[in-house]
Image (cartoon, rainbow, N blue to C red; front, side):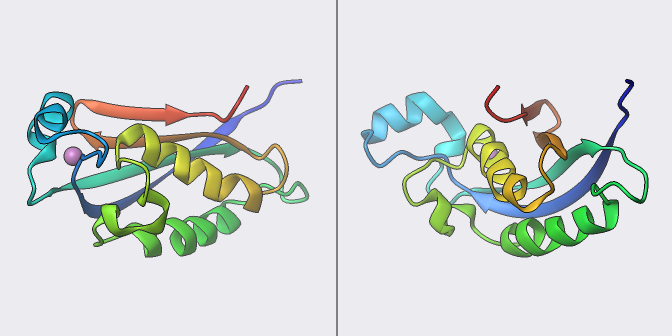
Length: 134
Ligand code: NI
């Protein structure tokens, strides 16, 4: 049976600083370069959420997805310093960790098997994507 997927696009603007407390100043600079600047910097993040496309009687609805993403992702991360979010207390705010966090927030709230992939565009040239543990 063929299965079509649909991807919705969302945006949030947030500040962050790539920094690991366990590393020295020099090690942080070596690992993260200018993204380790103590004053932080911002990105216009784009979040791409892919779900199974279904008919009305199936349970993956775009309205439900929009509501969930706006409430759980955009309201939480838009115009904040990501480093202050409790989820990043012990995690660096890399694109890898952000995309996995968004997956982990949304996946349990959507009908089983609905969520297919989450993508995060951080900069013109950096795109991260996660499709759960396979
Ligand atoms: Ni950055």
